[in-house]
Amino acid sequence: MDKRTVQIEGMHCTSCARRLEKSLQDREGIAGAAVNFAAGKAYITFNPEALAEKEILRIIADAGFEGKFNDGGGETAEEVLEIEGMNCASCARRLEEALQAAPGVKEAAVNFAAGKAFVRFAAGETDHSALAEVVEKTGYRVVPGQKEKDRSETTAATVDRDETAVSIAARRMWLAVFFAGLIMILMMINMFLVPVPGYFTISLVLAFPAVFIAGWETHRGTLRSLKHFSANMDTLVTLGSALPYLLSFLRLWFPLTTFVEMAAGIMALHLVGRFLESRARGRASQAIKKLLAMEAKTARIIEDGVEREIPADEL
Image (cartoon, rainbow, N blue to C red; front, side, top):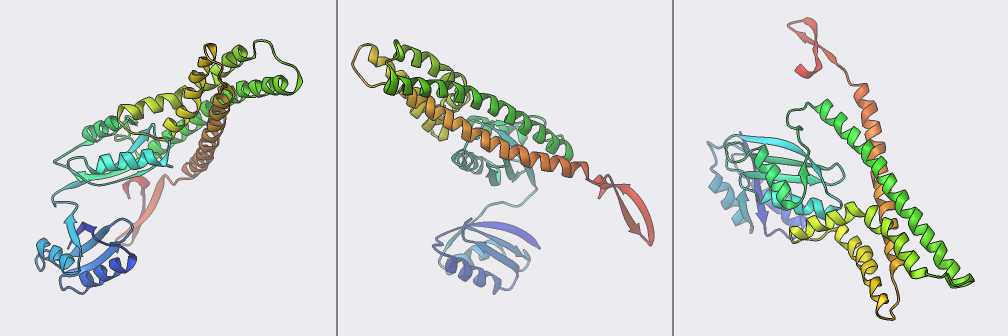
């Protein structure tokens, strides 16, 4: 029996998927068929001696849809790539589309929350290096050395990185919140108590660490996105913080309202969100770390009525 994935076009609702699934299941030679409307794919198990691929495509066409085999037979390989640099779901979607369009790739799925990409590809058409190059061209980075590590080592490394990310996110957040807070206090004094001499200059100086030092990683993400002619959440935050800050300098020549306070406040709120996101991942990592500590190192098997103990990795 062969198991193949067919990309389906023309389905508009779940009833379309059910109708196609029934048409496939009713055909002799097909042992099993499942159609996923959301993914636009049909997963088919069939006997290649009783049913040719072109006949499967004809069944799909007779049902009113268009099908295309995702894989072309032969040896396939799978890899899970750990990705750095994704900041939002649109980043994951863009990377997934780039991987799916890469030569030799049969299937690709990117999980933003886990920071991982699952790729199934033709072993003779592409490899780890080519996939990493696609990731880098899209503006992200594959964590090196993951291919050679076993599952426990890889997970432990991910845990350590998540914990480090929480610490870095906390430092950036507090730096931005501290200076944004000073600006807000100064603004209240200037508005409701007494005019503050040199208020504009002081605000510019206080906002710089919040917008450009604490927020540098965000601006760097924007530059990466623009380099690849795309936009993400970083781009939006840069437009809401760096741009108002720079436009405020026009007040030196024109009687304009300044936006320094808004720039610092937007960056501070953004970094608070980044910290909360990193902390949520860090807590999940701690739970994984505890589970790894409880992982069995050995297993007992029975062969020909004899029980023996072997390393769990050999199962």
